[in-house]
Length: 231
Image 1 (cartoon, rainbow, N blue to C red):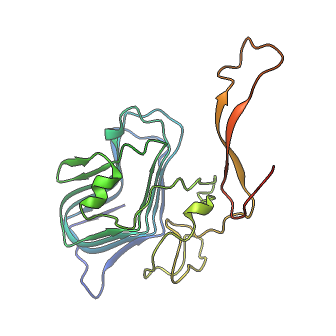
Image 2 (image 1 turned 135 degrees about the vertical axis):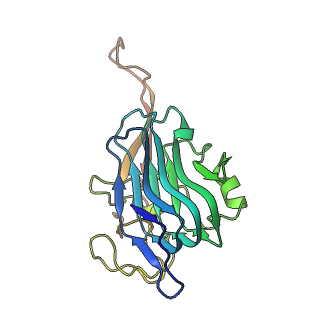
């Protein structure tokens, strides 16, 4: 999605909202949202997803924002689950010469590697989310795995109601949004009451050459609303 050399005005801003961007295959360089030399643009409640399971060396920008001002970037979900050999190739946001703009309540998830944050401002690469926040971005932002289902609906109860009120009253499917704590991304969702998931296996370390009896060690996470004391 691109806006080039096109200005909104304070009373009639451009709006990019409720879109689901999904990468299946990329060649060279790809941007979901590209804004160049344009002012007064609201980018709200979009889901940008990279989770096709492919090892990628392609350069991907969730948003590439350049030479613009008075942008509002809020309540967007960046869900990058792909195996990333070089995290510098996968940037949530690249910002260059952007002024008088607001970035907040966005969620950024890059696999399980929270030590790396994909964000660039005027060619400076932010190494982690804390540096991004300390530079004035996303004071209320988060890094939560939304656990998207195949239809891009989040399933993680920890991700529920993390957004803030905007002018976008409905979601991608036409569902009414909360007026106080809408969900981040393109889709409003209601988490399940009970939702246990296997999130890691520590033992055994291989599936070959074992005797009949083996010790199992694994991790189960409760993604639902209710507390579960046995299962």
